[in-house]
Length: 386
Image 1 (cartoon, one colour):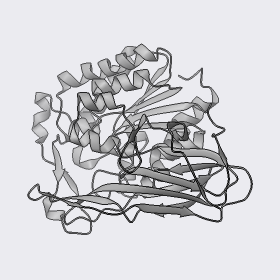
Image 2 (cartoon, rainbow, N blue to C red):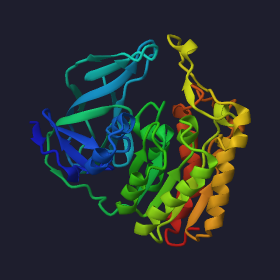
Image 3 (cartoon, rainbow, N blue to C red):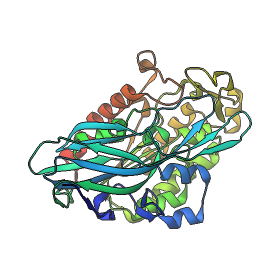
């Protein structure tokens, strides 16, 4: 017999809070006071997509059912893969469920108009799970927001037995949020977190990793055993700063985090290889000629010669970041060149399908390399990290 269990914040990992809605509860990755201060539509949409958020509990149930109401953004003339819900049992991914229902906002990039398409709730039913007591993790979609309506099981549940897992707080762009990965356990931070036995707090926000001071305060105030910051691509492709503003903004972001985490290991990661922005400033934009084709692509619209006036490219920003971190001389802060995670030599074998975001296999490549170069060393010597 199935029975419903209460949805509470104690069930969720990786979320800042739960919003009560007419249907149920919506997980948020940022606190509501941040969203009140700066309700930017892009950031608001991205933080409501629960990348890295899991529902976790112990149970002997063999049947688990989650009812949710997804909401996604779509683009006229461009097919986008739906989000998925992944089920992990005792650390192993055993099932995935592609979302098929919910609401959609369709945006036409040619004229800026949008159309709302209402839908119905989605049921994720996981049947025939292994018998016996086990740890259940339901990984919520990284690329669609959703309201949690109900969770039903056929046996009692108890709290997760991993409350003391070390917490990794990661900040980044859409690549960190998981753009173009097939499912929530397939995004590179999830791959590294699971390999290292870490509890992930993913603050990767598509189009929104802009060194906002309020995000630095969120990280400052968050429990964290390890912090990583992947910075640069959004600043370039939004053309949001010049070199003169970028370096002090980076230091200010780090200084704020250090106010709350004076000794916590921090790794600052520069951008991975992205051919369109390596030597060409932003802003970036959708290549309208590719709308309606099998693969929408992005391009850079800046002028290479503008770098002499302080406009940023990925090459410029990597050099500035390396110098800034070296100049801080902090024993528990390290710089990681993003080209070590995905460099020009990888582009032929693992091309970025849309010229900006890695696909699922490239997320795995990045996650595995980050695990080897950073996570493995830190988890072995968490208090000696250099």
